[in-house]
Structure formats: structure tokens, C-alpha cells
Length: 397
Image (cartoon, rainbow, N blue to C red; front, side, top):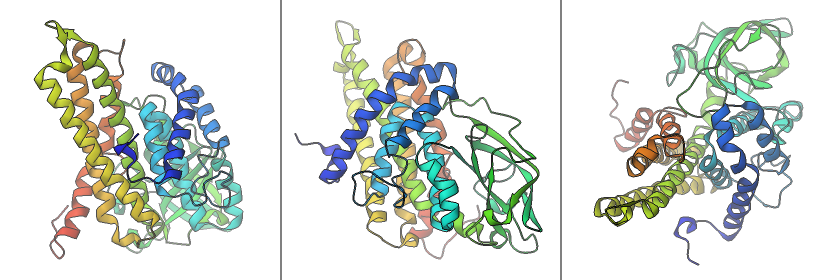
């Protein structure tokens, strides 16, 4: 049967999606409502462990991957993000955060660092968290206040991070901090690994977020935390380069996550439109709903094409600096589409869509809203796209 959804995927990638979908149906789907209701990390963590045991979290790490895909790439990562997010944004968020910092350590660390930190994350034995955002640091990392000074064979790190995914549940933290305050912050930033249990490391607050229930997200406080000098990743004062090096891939993976939530919301709306009867017929036969579904399906397909285009280009080995436009387009458009579809799904489902009792539409609405913020705001994505479309002309952010 012809499937336009997977038109740009090869047979290996299609089989991977089918295999992963079956895994999610068995190992993820039965638990997502309880995770949402209880906001329980204890229910979420075993799923991440199973993802690691099944080989899905080791996809980006050739040294540790033991699956049957000869050359795993960003396309497989996007499929993973889409399939997980279609069931649970929280599960995908917890798993993806570890994969992202694992990839950073894998690419910029040494063999000892890979074995100590990446291997356990790749197999779901440990969870990772990435410490970038602060009270005054979001899109603009130049305002970073967290500092690290060298004291003998240890870094002493002081600062406070905010909106950190997996904050209270992580075993491994990749902390971005200023190691040379005398120069521009982008030239004086470093990335240092801090392990759970380090003296002075605490997570004083887990935020009560609008969506993504079950995923711990909040503050990470570092009060003169000592980390071995050897925990530096990517070289002294090279943190900004390390941070920027994977942005295209991260944005494309985030776009895959958007596809998952948008797809789930559209499926909910379609099902409801087919069974909800008003004035003697299913509401899906009313012209407004009939055409609305067509519009939403078209938006989703357009977002999918942009996302998998970016993923295919990255896997083709195109220079990363040449892909910022395509990756930003994918993330920007997919996040906007996810919000449009989630909003319209609630409208189509009416009172049932606004209720937590019978449908998940309101959950998708809440989960989708973060997508225009996390992983790079829509405003920043538009700025990046415009710098490519209007070279030489820049506005003040």
C-alpha cells in the first residue's frame, strides 16, 4: 500500500518505524495515561531503561550501537522522536535529553569519558541533563553567570540553572559555565560534566509545568561543586563551539517531536469527527469540520516534508553551517503546525476536547505549547532563516 507519510524513507527506515511503533504500542502506550495523571517519574524511568535495552538510545553512538541498522543517522532519530512523542511528550523528553548530551560527550570527549558517561546513557542505565538556561540566559547565552575556576585538579563550579529537563532525576549533568570571564562569554565558556551526588549539587525546585507531565524540569543549584579537571568536554573555553555544533541536529530532532504530537492530535480529531453525531450525522460530514481536517492534514504533511528533508541533508554529510536554514525551517514550521493542529483538535472535540475524562486532546494542546519555546524559540528560528534569506541585513534582537 502506498504511504505518502514515508515516501522519502527507504525500506530500512520504514521497517525501523514499524518495529519502533510496535515497541511503543507495547512498552509505552499502556503507561502514558497513568504517567500523565500521577506525574510519576517512577513510571517513566523504566520506559527509558527499556528503550536503552532495546538499542534505541544507542543509535547516535557507533561504538555502542548493537542493532541491525548499518548506518544509523538523524533520520532514525527523527523517527524515534516522532513515535515516542506521538504517545508521550514526557517519555520522549526524558530520553532525548540524555541522547543529546551523550552525543556531545561522544563527539568531543575522550575514550574514558565515553565509557564512563555515554555508555550508561546509551543503554538506559543512567539519565542525563543539560545545564544551559539560567534566570537571564535563554536564547542569549552571553549572559551566563555560572562560573568555574580551576583549583588544583578540580573545577569549582558556582551558579544556578533553570528549566533543566531531568533536573531531579539525572545521574549525569553537562554544565555550561564561564571559565574565562575576561573575554567575550562566547570565547570564555566551557562544558564540564558533574555527576549526581557531588557535594554542593542540588535540585531545590521541580516546576509545575503546563504540560509534559511526568518529566522533571526545574532548577539545578551548584554551590562550589567540585568536578575533576578531566571532566572538561571539548577543551578549555570551547564550550560555545561545543554547544553550537549540534544545533542543526537538535532542531531537526525537535521537529520530529513536533510531528509526533501533531499526528496524535490530528488522529484524535479524526476519530472524534467520525463518531460524534450532531443533527443526525457525524460532525465530520459538516463542511467546516470536513475541510478543517483536510487543512490540518496538509499542514502536517508539509511539516513532515521539511523535517525529513533536513534530516536527510544532515545524514548526507552536508556541511553543518550550510544547514542552519533548513533545520530552523523544520523546527519553526513543525512547532507552529503542532500548535495549530492541537488547538483545532480541541475545537473539533468540543467539550470532550477540553476535558481530561475521555480524550487526550487537551493534553496535546498543553504539550504542544512548549514546542514553540524549547529547543530554540520560533522567533530565533525565523531570525536564523532571515539571515540566510537576507544576507548582509540584520535586525537587532
